[in-house]
Image 1 (tube, one colour):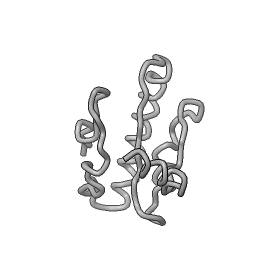
Image 2: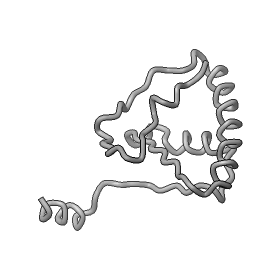
Image 3: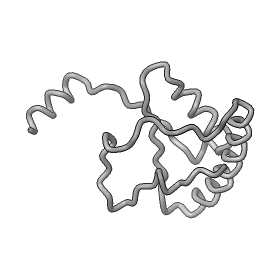
Length: 109
């Protein structure tokens, strides 16, 4: 089974509106064993691509994990990034806006 990356790709010139992207995707595996096998294959691929990508120093890859609390985002990031060189990645956590950020947003409207 192959995941079509075009379903998740955004071109640099496009304006990204996260609310327009689906938050639920169809399952790409039928069992836990199938999921593990698929994950291993994709982590190997991602590792090889990351080496080339990091060496070129021209582009960036943004991965967004959006879900409710306790939905498994941390575990997913840990599994997906397990084969990636830590020097070539950064992970940031985005929380709800602070009171100051909300007030600034209201003033700008």
